Image 1: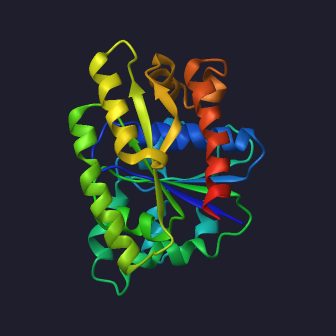
Image 2: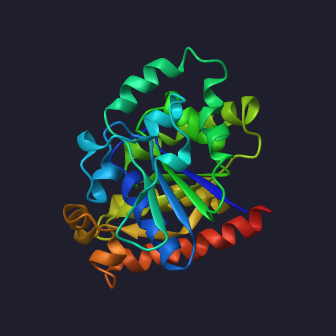
Length: 255
């Protein structure tokens, strides 16, 4: 059974791409066959794996426009069992054309039905609630919402929850969500207070694992490697490994 996981938040700068790459790498490290899909026209996930977006001839935009099948746009990465469907600025042009197509919210969901052989598929969403994020959530079994314990990031959760209700009602009643606290600074009292408030408000919908600030996470994209290859013993590596283990338990509980 393939688990489809969207990583999204309407607020930018909360470690969506970092979480997509790091979690995907840890799942692959644990023996899973993993596919990452870059759904952001800024292509940060693609860049983080050492690729040059302008030079790519095959991207997720081709799939969404119906020009190629998913299995025609896979790229290998430096990590075994981890593959990528990349993005570039063509996706921005593609997005403007999607909205005129019938049932455009389900295009990605239908495309993923032709992609057997993966244990997990992770969708890195743009920091907007537009067409691309709608497609991701309509296809996903689980939405992970990375949330920095700061006011504006926590406030953006309201928009995400409203969108979840809409997607469930119209396209994907099976969609579930979990909140992941990211970029946590334990020396910052405000971070501690807000993290506690988020846990109180969302209870079991919040992962036990927390991702703290780690400079190694900012360095690893420069070398085109996920954190488990760049700094396998770093705090971030340990925490994302813990998250991968907790994710397995989460899917078991959601059955």
